[in-house]
Length: 180
Image (cartoon, rainbow, N blue to C red; front, side):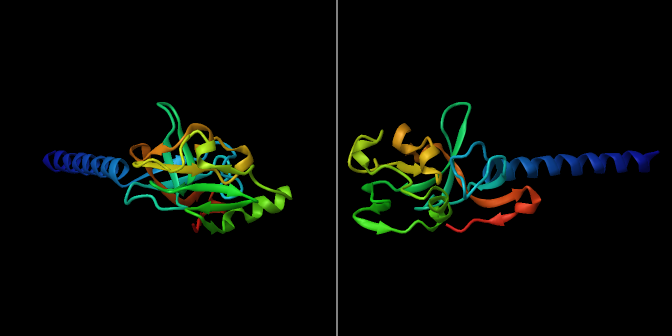
């Protein structure tokens, strides 16, 4: 009887330790997220499941998850960092006057046979000024014609960023690491 009590107590301890480890990892290191919508097509598909890393600061072209409001998180690509001037003209992204290639948009461009977005300067967007404000990020979805992003909702406070993501783990047939 004593042996059975000890065994039960050991199992309970193991379960408590496991729960504490899972909570700690999920709260401070990694968490899962489900892609909801088409704003990141063709890079990400609706209902794919991803791992979000809460480690490190987001960099240009990272895919980030952030709190859009109290009930909803968005997943977008970082285009502008604090202090950057962002402009889009003739289907080319310019950051601080330098043109950037966006190879993750190639498939999208091929599918629509044309420009992905109307030309804009940062001050013409919801940011409303020529540079990305300090402590904020300018984000856009890869499906530029069908994305609610910083052009409409403004720059995203870095404090609202949950983390970065580039690992799709479900569906199993689509497991992959997304290169930025």
